[in-house]
Image (tube, rainbow, N blue to C red; front, side):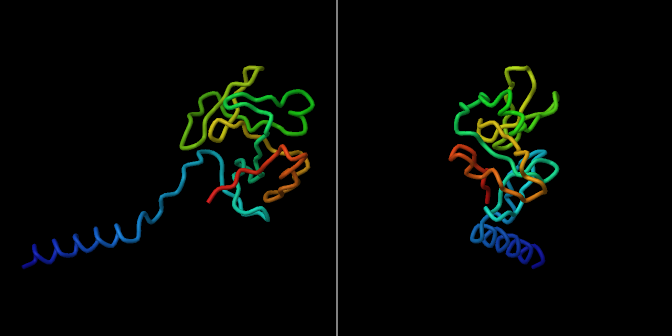
Length: 133
């Protein structure tokens, strides 16, 4: 009888999990975090600063250098960092490593002063936060 009850409970747990779907299938953002902002939930660097993509980049290649990179610092990846989930790592022209989301290089914005700021979102219609669920 005990075996029958255990089997029924196990079957019920399986059915419940199928009906409600995965409970905590959180996306893996490695060293990045998710920050609640006025723009919604966005990716942020390890310090909580919002990260952005640049429309003039190409998949896997940053086109933001010089003064651009001074205003929009690349989100650097450690030399031994590994891609995880939708996060990839690109090599910049200077040889440094940069985090990318779905192969789009990621940057912060110098005018964002504290975690959750999104001053760069929509800047010149070419800079965008990375919205996540």
